[in-house]
Length: 540
Image (cartoon, rainbow, N blue to C red; front, side, top):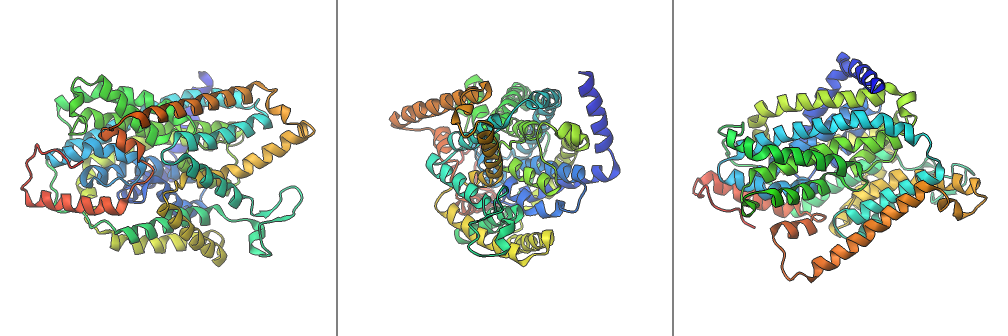
């Protein structure tokens, strides 16, 4: 306890340094603003801004990226509520009750409870992170190479099995990411691998080129084909703060969502999508008015938003202590640490305490800044949503290309970025989830390094993976999860009908942002006419 409090005190001294405080403020502000742009989401946001961190101090850079992460998580909820236009998979659940509330003229309270719930959920998760991280880092120090190999492999498989969409496609995407990661020189023998005689490829493919291409350029190409969002009409917000009745109805939902989001965020493959779905389903079971869910239940909205933000904060626990990113966004932040010549893991707290404790302390500060920004500036954010996508897309494209070039002043990186933009476009077109790809790219070298070390330790025997308790426990856990998912899938397939919640839960992996944009534009036009009955149910 004393060690943790001393560490937090040191972390706050780092976070409150004027330069770092500015980075936190920039992070939450930029994250919120870019999260507003439908179709980008937190992964694309981090990918596009990753080059900006290259020349920054490590602590400030990661503080800013962390702020962008949880800032974009909130910013992405604004178009989900007002336009029924989810920027990422986890925001799909937000549309269930957020959009009907907006149609009923209660967009202000919906956005307000989202801000308050996100703040409380994030704060509770950060408290848990503060006290669990040092203990887990101490335990992680005794983990050997066989344990790390199985842990990293389990992380990839959990992403595929727990995540949304096709499991086979997720595994294929992860395998493609691992293949791309091995391009370059073998770290042990210096033999060229998959370079095809190209000298530029001998140094490998840079993570910035891959990330910006997949999530930036690829997303722009995909949205260009489907149709950019047309912009929000003349929506007027009345009051922003939720009423006393809203708060009474939502307070237990916020508490339950905080706990659910914290624990699911730690699990590899959990993340915002799963925590949102689970929290929403749990709250519907606890609710005294379950039939109101999907028609404007503010407690349902509070539960999913609180869990989403709590999971985004607790996800830093396995990254900082084990060096294993549990979701695609944290994989990109892992890459940002590598750009700073810092390897996350058990030794991070000892070798770079300014980064370890500074990032944790900055989350407390960032959540407060996010609340102070969001409540008074909601009206401004709504005005920004009126900018059509066809205007924003060229600006994003120019920033992406300039950012990739600035990292190494390399036109080859720009070319690779364009190539992976095309790859990302085709993967999105054929409904492949891009998350497993970037996780495979990040975890590929970790898997290779620890597998080789394990083989050296065991003289080439695979028995080493079955003779240690940690790999056995992890493999048993993975087996239980796989069996549970198979049984659940068969049970779901036997049901002749699915309700609104179940149907969306099974289709989270393939969000058609173009179609949603057109639907959101039509909804905005209807609201402009002022002819809709406030009690009308949202179109299903």
